[in-house]
Amino acid sequence: MLFSIESCVLGKEKLGEIDYLVELLTPKGKIWAVAKGAQKSRRRFLNLLEDLTFLRAHLRRSKKGNLPILEKVDLLFLSERARRDLKTYIFFSYVSEVLSKISYSGLSSDYFEFIKKFIKEIDLYGVPFLAKTYFEQKLLLYLGMALNWESCVKCGRIPNRLAFLNISSGGILCVDCKTERNQPVERPVLELLQNIARLPVCFKNLENLEKSKIFEEKYLKKACEISEISFFFFLPFEIKSLKFLKNLNNGVGDEED
Ligand SMILES: [Zn+2]
Image: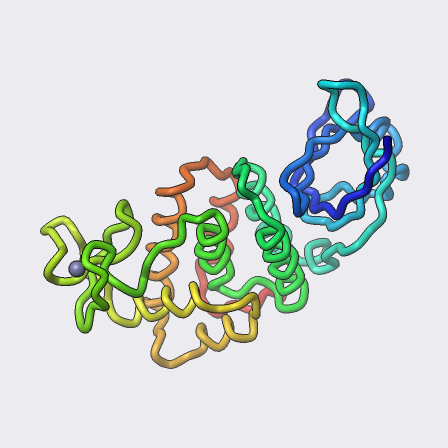
């Protein structure tokens, strides 16, 4: 029985001598499918089984317990930028590696649409300094683990001056609820995190945040640091491409081209 579904390629692995096992993210969750003969004849899939390519996948259900067979693919979207720009290529490796590790059964079509929009923005604008932080904070949101950067996670009050970081309880604490262990978060850093969490998928706005005079480089870097710690606190994966990405990201405001 044949069926078709919009998919985003998250990765592939060799299966025996000639086939590939392909990991696909779909609006209904993840699918593993067998691309027969794809190792021998790359033309069969027109080299489209690359990370973060959007396809209409035509699949055939096989016998019970076996993985579906990928019969044919139609290209929906492929980032040209990722093929010519190293920074985008490495960022895509990071994104697909993270998405591949997440096996959350509650994946929704909203989550899929977010990934699609996000990839398209990167194709248009390249990789802004805050792209990784934005991706981390939004992903946590779609996974139901969003951090609360707005109000004290204990008493619910909005801290009027000082806020203190408490990632393990999911956000910030006010001055009355904090303990000695909680580090204060500088106001601009907190505002940056709040802004990032609220932004729709629009890199123009993200770039405006980066350029804003309120958010000096040290604040941008601190917000990125806090975001990364919180992300890997809730999703403790080992991501191989992270090291490469961080080497690239060392300079704020570098042009990607
Ligand atoms: Zn409080």
